[in-house]
Image (tube, rainbow, N blue to C red; front, side):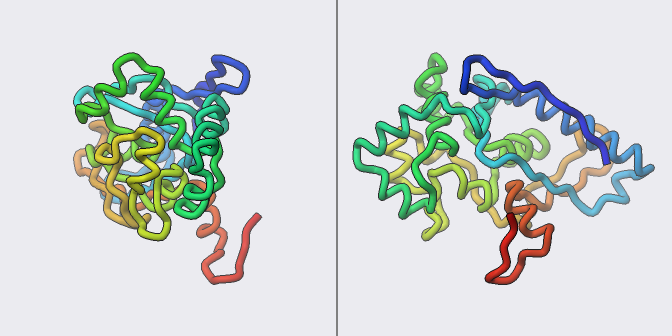
Length: 232
C-alpha cells in the first residue's frame, strides 16, 4: 500500500480542476513505492488495475501527450448552462433513455464540450483529429501503455454512451458537438489494456489488466455479484 495527495484546484466558486500530469506522476510514485514497500519486482506482479473517479475529464494532444487544460473534476458545476440548453432543445428524454442518466453537469459530455468551446483552437484541433478525450482511466492507460481505451463502467458515465447498443451514441455526440471518431475504444473491465514498465522502472513490462470506475469497483469488491444485492 502507498498513497499520495495531489492538488485540488478551485478557480471560481463551484469550479473544480485537477492537473492531469500531476495525477499521472503521483500514480507512478505510489506504484513504485508500493513495489518497494512489498519488496516486489515486476516478476512478482500478475497485473495492474486502475480505478478512478469516473466523470473527471481531460483532453490532450495525441502527439505530445500534453493536456490542453486542467482536468475538469466530476463535481464541477461550470457546465450547468450547457445541460440547461440541451434540455431546452428537447434532448432530455433522449439522454435519459439512451444513457440511463439524468441530464446533469456531473457527467463528462458537457465537460468535453466546455473544453472544446473555451480552450483557444481546441475545437479545430479536435476536428482535425489532433486531440484525444477521456476520463482519468483513459488518460492513465494511454500514459502507461500508449493504448487509447476505456471500459464500460467509465464509458457509461460520460453521458455519451448508449447503454442499449453498448456504443458511443452518434446523436448525443452530435448534440454535444463532440467528434465521435475521437472517443476511446470501449473494452470489458477485465480486458488487456496494454503493458507498462512504469515509466522505465521495470525491465519487464507488466500488463494493465483491469479498469473500472470507483463505485462499480466497490460494488464488485464488496461481493455484490448477484441480482437483488445492493451497496450503499
